[in-house]
Image (cartoon, rainbow, N blue to C red; front, side, top):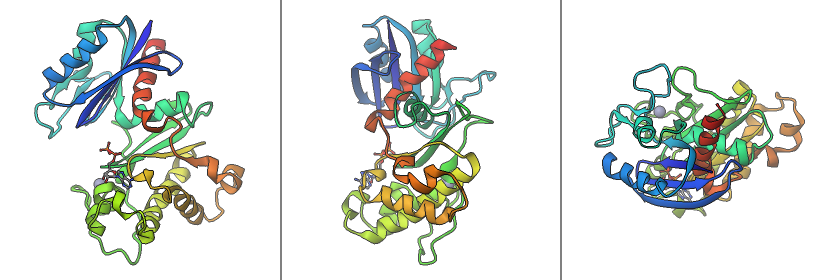
Length: 291
Ligand code: ADP
Ligand code: ZN
C-alpha cells in the first residue's frame, strides 16, 4: 500500500506516490489551471495506485479548522476559479481514504521533521524565502495552527538605517516579506536575486533582515532546529551571513551550546532539498493515516 502526496502551488501541482518512510516512487508535475481540469489530472494519476491515505500541502488561503463547514477549502483567493474550492472534499469523494490537509509551508515543515534536518527533534522552524516569506513551526511535536496558522513572514522588523526602500508587501509595506522576499530584492536593487550574486551588499542586507527575524523566532518559540529554504536561500553566501546576524541580534543572551558553538548545524538548508514540500505532503498523508 502506498501514500499519495499533492504539493499544490499557484503555478504548478506536483503529485507523488510514496511510502511511510518518506520514499517517493513516482511523481508528475503539471500547471495549475482551472480546478476541475487540474483535479482530474490529480485523480487520473492516483487512480493507478492502491492508496492508504493522501496528503495535501497547498497554496492558500485555506480553512484548516476541522470544526468549520468549509474545512479543507481554499477560501478567498484572488487566483481565478479557486476561491471556495473544496479541496479535501473533492479528493475524499473520489478515494474514501484519510486525507491530510495543511498549508504548503506547514507541510514542508512536517516533511523536514519526519525525514529531513529536524528528524528526531521535537520542535523546529522552517522558513521559505521565495516569492513570499512563509514560516512553519513545530512546537512540542506538533505543527502550530492556533486561530488559522502563524504568519511569521509578515512580522515587523527593525529597519537597517541605510535602507530607504519602502517595502513591497501590499498589506504592510515594510514587514519582513516586504523587505526581504524575492520580489522585494528585485524591486529594491532593480535586478533579480539570481543576477545579484556578486553584489555583497544585497546579501548583507538580506541576512540582516532574515537574521533578525530568525532571532525573534528563537526568542519566542525556542526551536531545536532552524531550516531556511526557498529560491532566495539558493544564494550560497546567504546562510553564513544569516548565522552571523542571528548571533549578533541574540548577543549571547540565549545560553545553549547549539547556539553558542554549533550554529552551522543549528541553522541549515533543508535536508530534503527541493523535496521538502512534496515529502511534507507525504508526511501529512502518514499523519492522517495514523490519526
Ligand atoms: P515560490 O516562492 O514562488 O514557490 P521560489 O521559492 O523558487 O518559488 O522563489 C522564487 C523567488 O526566488 C523569485 O523572486 C526569484 O527571483 C528568487 N530566486 C530564485 N533563485 C534565486 C537565486 N539563485 N538567488 C536569489 N534569488 C533567487
Ligand atoms: Zn506583510
